[in-house]
Amino acid sequence: MTPLKNDIFIKTLLKQPVDRTPVWMMRQAGRYLPEYREVRAKAGSFLDLCTNPELACEVTLQPLERFDFDAAILFSDILTIPDAMGLGLYFSEGEGPKFKNPVRTAADVKK
Image (tube, rainbow, N blue to C red; front, side):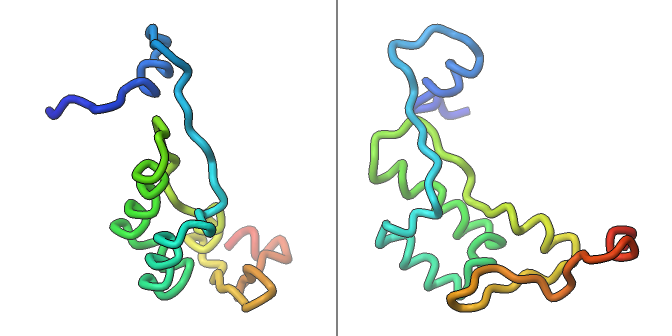
């Protein structure tokens, strides 16, 4: 196995001694990064970006390549969960996320 270049975050999680407090930041999809916008355009849609492992990995690592952070949060979106449940996630320009099959009744919950 290749030794880790930066294991400070893992050591901290394991309550092992470290020489400094590790840094990680949650970000709102990196929309301010030009490299994120390029990958997002290549994906075709936000949902396609979330469900493409290679592209999701690429945007996960972008902040680590640009800044001296110690860890990254895997890029995804909480809305991928209801979409995987069959709710039919889609995005309307200027309106945000919507569902083709919203949960509105007890029968919908049972489905």
